[in-house]
Amino acid sequence: MNPVLHENRLELNTSFTNDLSAGSNRAHPNLAGLLSLNDRANVADHSIKYGATYKEKDDFLMLPVVDVAFKLLFGDEKRTERLKSLLSSILQLPIEEFQDLVIANPNLPPDFPGDKYGILDVRAALVDGRQINIEIQVLPYPAMPERTLFYWGKMYTQQIAEGESFIDLKKCITINIMDHNFPLVKKVHSVYHVVEDKDGSRLTDALEIHFFDLEKLRSGLDIDGLNPSMLKWLRFLAAKRKGEFEMLAKEDQELNRAYERLQQISADDEARMWYELRQKWILDQRTLEAVAAAEREKAKNALEEGKAKGLEEGRAKGLEEGRAKGLEEGKAEGKAEGKAEGKAEGKAEGKAEVALNALREGMDITLIAKLTGLTEEEIQAFAK
Image (cartoon, rainbow, N blue to C red; front, side, top):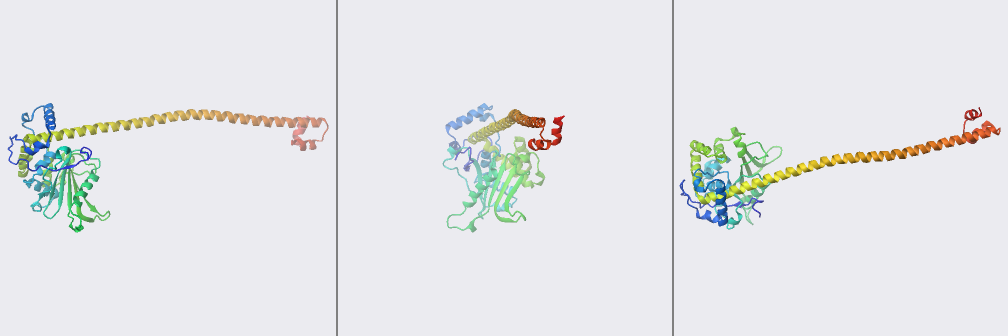
């Protein structure tokens, strides 16, 4: 599968160093293995082009809305408190329900280095069998509802093996956190189930899909209807500046611990190399999409211009052809009418001459009228 066109799933390296201090630059051995020497050189070169080496950027801070940082922050199987708090807040469920939460995808797949542009998600399982998948979406996806149902379906059907019963299937919850405008709804948070069209009754509770639109959150849309605990985590994920994180950290202990951990992750050189490689890819994708959008607009304008020009030329040609055809038909019609009129006039003159000659010979007017078809009055007029 092409990782650029199809957003594959990658697992988190949860053995990420847990004892990093905020100022540490120790390279994590597993993260170092994620990047080839060429990748690492490219990332370092990219960093220098944008103003400084890693060590010179002491105020550098990853954004948790980038999936790499999100997974390092919330996907650590040894530190599940943040994920429990996040899930409890956004799903509005008691924290006790997540007490025995287990991260189901804690390790990187063997082919990870060759699949470096896939989507990083966090998948968790509860003690009662319920499955939860959280995914960050930085870029718009053209078929997001269909894509969501597809991956929800895989998560749901993978629960049972051959010979097991459908009764063994447990509820699956998909959570999409999007750093772009979600056009289907005008709310920050929307949740979907399978319901009956008229009375709204649920067919089953097995399906639950959430969409969180951080772009709408930043604009202040619909935030009054959000639960305070949900709102605090969404603001943390949506933050773009260091000052925002510091303000949120002062207001809440959980956010303060999350901010401290984010600083630790940001201070790790290998994690930062991976993060900046991801950011570079995101920038490339946005550039490609902008170019494609410009090309589509250009093609659309060319099509409209071509239609307008074709219509104008068609009208002009039609008018010209219409005039030519009208002239031709007019000539033909005039010729036919003239011919008919001439024939009629010639015939009338012929009858008049016959009647006049008959009168001169002394033929009876009544008989002349029968022979020529003229009236007796017309024949008498010739005699005068």
